Length: 462
Ligand SMILES: *Cc1c(COP(=O)(O)O)cnc(C)c1O
Image (cartoon, rainbow, N blue to C red):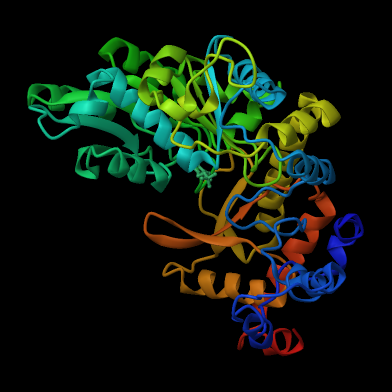
C-alpha cells in the first residue's frame, strides 16, 4: 500500500469496474478456507484498481479526504488491538477524551465540552439536533416523545445547508416541514440573517417554538461561510440553540490565516466536524462536540443491567462513549486521530488547508485565463464552482464532467447552483500541487474543445 500511495499519479484517478470484475463479487458464501496470499492477490487485482480514487491529487469530486500513510498504519494498529470503545475502563476511552479536548481547543469551546467520535458529520449533525431538542423540551422528551406536543418546534438553516440537516430533522421526529429554509445572499451564498430574524418573529407570532438555528462553516456546494458571529448573536438574543456544521470548515480553524473567517464558531452550542475530510484522517472519523456536557449526557445516557458500572476494575469509569450517542460497540477511531496530530502536528494540517485554498484561487485564475470557462460562485475556501462560458442549461457541464471521469485524468463533480448544473472542483487533497492544477486545466481544456463522443477508448482499455 505504501508503494501504491507513492505511485498514485501513474494511474488513472478512477476507472470503471469491468463487468467481469463485478461478476467476481456475486459468488455464494465461501464455506471453506483459502490461502491468505491468494485472497491478497485477488484484492490487488480486483479491488485496489477500482476504488473511488480520492487519494489521487486530481480527485476533486464532492469533498473527499485523501488519507495518509500514518492514518493507514494507525488504523491497522487499532484493528490489531481491537478494543471496544463503547465504554469500560481502558486506555481507548482516554485517547477518545484526549481527542474531545483537542476538538474543544480547535473550536474554541470550553475544556468541559463533551465530544464523541461518530461515522461522519451526518451523524454528528443528527446528535446536535437531538441535544438541541432535549434542550428545548427537557430530556423527558425521550419518554414522552413528540406525539402530545401542543406547539411546533421550528428550526432554521440556509438553502445551502447540507441535506443531512434535513434528514436529521426528519429522523429526530420534528418533520422537515418545520425546518425553515432561509435564503442566501445571492453573491456570497451565505444565510440572510435579516430574513432569519423575520422568520423567527413570524413563527413566534404564529404560536410556534423556534428552537434551533444551524450555521454552516464551509458549505458543501461552494465553501461559503455563514455569518456565524451574527447568527450566534441572534440565537443568544432569541434563546435558540446554535449548531454549526463544520464538516469542512473546522479544519480551517487550524490555520491562523483562515481561522478569522470562522469567527463565531466558538460561540456555538454544538458543532459537527469531519477528521476524514480536510484533516486527512482515513474514513471514517466524524466528531460532535457539545458545549453543555450534561445536556449531551441527558440526551442519550440510560441504564442497562449489562452495562452497570463498578467502582474498580474493567467496568469502572463514569461517562462512557455509549452514554453520548446511539452506538454501543465502537471501534478505536480516536487512535488514528491521535497519531495524525502527534505525527504531523496541528500546524501542518492547517498549512495543508491553506495550500488547498491557494490552489483553489490559482485554479480560478487559470480558468479565467483559459477563456472557455467562467466562475459561478466566489472562491472562499477550497471549492471552485465554474461552468462553460455562456452555457446556461448546464447540460454540457455535466457531460464534460462525465467525459473527464471516463478519461481518468481528473475527477471534479457536478453540483447545482440556482438549479443550474455547474462543475465543482473541491481541492481537499494534501497531495495536490500547482502542477496538478495546471494538468487539471489542460485536461478539461482539451476535452471542452474536442467535441464528440465519450472517450470509449478509456472504457475499452480498462
Ligand atoms: C460532508 C458534509 C456533511 C456530511 O458529512 P459525512 O461525513 O459525509 O456524513 C455535512 N455537512 C457538510 C458541509 C459536508 O461537507
